[in-house]
Length: 277
Image 1: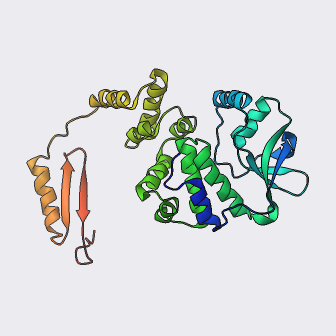
Image 2: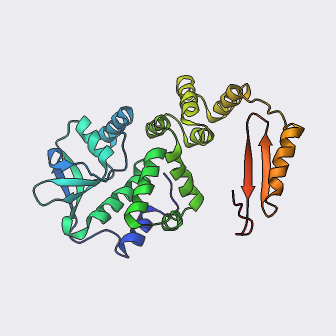
């Protein structure tokens, strides 16, 4: 996922002019069975085919970027970044992997988590849903507002807001986003529907492999027949409502619907206009 700042600039902004490099860092070959996964990993789904493709690429061209780990001091190491590369080495049945080893004393837990998220956002091709979760983790860890998070990442607040809106989607849609079964463009079309309708549309997207444009056409055809014209208010009902409305001259009251169903909107701008209902 592309952010407004390059990774080196982001790390320097967070860790200071020296970035996150430290004289105690070491480049070592570590046995895979001594490395454990990070509890701060923002990725929640690992596509097997993508891992196999990455493993094949590594087998042909070698590992271009070592994984980053922190020395836990008990003969084991915890991944900070590079879990996809780590899993690919496991698929290749490798014994060891090149790793940048950071001393535990140089990074506290918040810094470890932040570093892992930064690395994943820039290098690991996160899904839209995992990106949203990564943003949420950063926001919670540092107590940032959406605007402060956007400023730090050098992107717009709207960009951040759009990702957080994904949490309003149904669990099934969120899972599909996590697995890259639909795009953010698909997701934007679903926000105005309840969970039941979202899941119905989702099933069609997946089974028919619909593009965003084709999904919009499907939605139009699906719900066009369900739109019913609401008959206007009868003169008797409108007269009764207007009578009620006259009791609160300082408020702005509007009606929509008919004698069977409808809505009433009451607006006021000060205490004097507040209706004593």
